[in-house]
Length: 357
Ligand code: NAD
Image 1 (cartoon, rainbow, N blue to C red):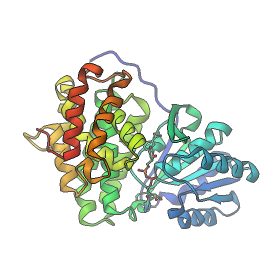
Image 2: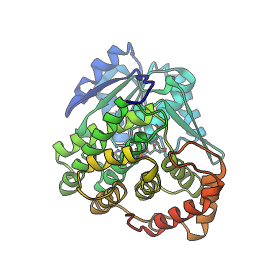
Image 3: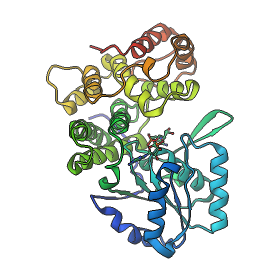
Image 4: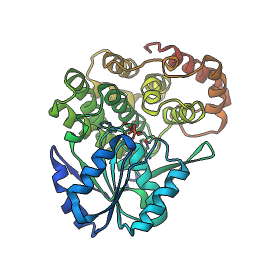
């Protein structure tokens, strides 16, 4: 057993089909009386339904959350929360809505109650991101970690199959990289392996029937585990590449994760044999490598498998490789200017959607 340091994050999780029925109890436990309810425009109806259900505990609805939290949206939402004299932010939706709740909490310390409806995992992390002048700045602050998370699989039944698959692969990416994190610990290793297992097992069921509650429950359970790993230990090459590709070339978040993950795992495999063994065990395909197993899972679930199919241009691959090696960061296999050619190869494989060995 290697030495480790483990700090548990202070958050309360309420899980189960129908658990939205505990919302009023959870608001009261936070000592809140005037909640601002947040959502994207696409989920505005859900946000209004939440406000209606909690009656006079709701102060107002802000349904303008968008991807990557533009500073202008954050300022509007903060101002609206102030005007309402809100004492709690309820975020119903995916990472974009949770991210807006975090942007409010960062300034005001308002407690966030998250009700996740995707598998992105932001609700379990103290990581926030705000985009200003086209640049997304991320940071860590315990004030933004949602105090309470209500995981109700019934709310995920409407997540389209395509988005469910890429969102699940996004979650698996957190766990896979968590397994070879520099600051990994045995508790996160258990959660990461179980998270991958739960999501890999759930995907065929969701694909066969998006409204199958057992598969949806398994997937959301996996998302919770993987999100916790993301919020507790450091990420490496895969997340760095996805941040660069998403931010600089404006590629869609969950799809980029889906395409890049098999190639990042293949790149790191020899340097992280224990992590690879755990991923293979979680995927449960005898004789198939972790990288190929992840590729097969995504492909068999109907996900896009190539950067060229999600908006990347061949002529931008050189720039992407330059950016990926520009600033040194920890990775089980060292990354620096000496590895530029190998990173460029990795990107070419991801661009073409080649199955790794
Ligand atoms: P998203 O929140 O942008 O949601 C995508 C779309 O799906 C939105 O229109 C949303 O309203 C809709 N949607 C969500 N759930 C639905 C449901 N159940 N039924 C129907 N439609 C639904 O997507 P995401 O992938 O969850 O989040 C991506 C964002 O989260 C990115 O900006 C990413 O950087 C951030 N993120 C942050 C962290 C963190 O720790 N800070 C972690 C993961 C992701």
